[in-house]
Length: 307
Image (cartoon, rainbow, N blue to C red):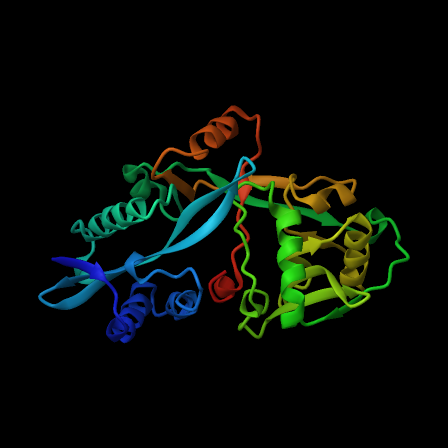
């Protein structure tokens, strides 16, 4: 058994392996292809395992900067991992995880996080309920009217600095919030069912939403400059809908714009593991003690094919 970083010559085999590992679904293979386009992508953290010179497994750890206790933290997201069926339950997945951890530690990453099976990952030190989902559902009667006028349109390259600034202001205090990128590809989705919109006032982007057309009443990402902008955006999005659910967290800046507070639901499958000393241990202790709500992740646009 040989574990090594991927090379471009491996791409086709990795895609084929991941499609089979996920029951014939193409989403994970597409996700890997899109994640390779990120400026932070590191091929040394995309590992294959060979048996008799044939790739039979693959694991990807994608670098991110996340927020924890108001601090920026170097982290990796472990996803996906796939092993060819005849080689499963033979310790190959364990070897890939351990080697991925070792390389990430050597590159000064202090945390790994994922969504997966608690029974498998806890043996490596992963903690369950490390984060979860968070949202608030609003009706038109619960949103105070605003006289603000906004233009909603697809984001442009010129909007990116403003959108990045909005994301930092909206999400910086939310634990496990991923720092968004500053390129247009970070703000538009290749999934035709997912609509991304910038909300513009006087030529400046002051808001942003990401919504799946199949679920128009659920906003996957919501950013607003201030409370008045947030309420105007919600009024625009509501239209004829009876209610609207926003992916806000109690620590999101826009949560203060509404009288109803977001609710957080932790997930057993939301797992995280400290790779080096950092704020995760303190954060997790506060979450376990009930003095701090669990954080939540808004997955980037690349994940629109798998979530």
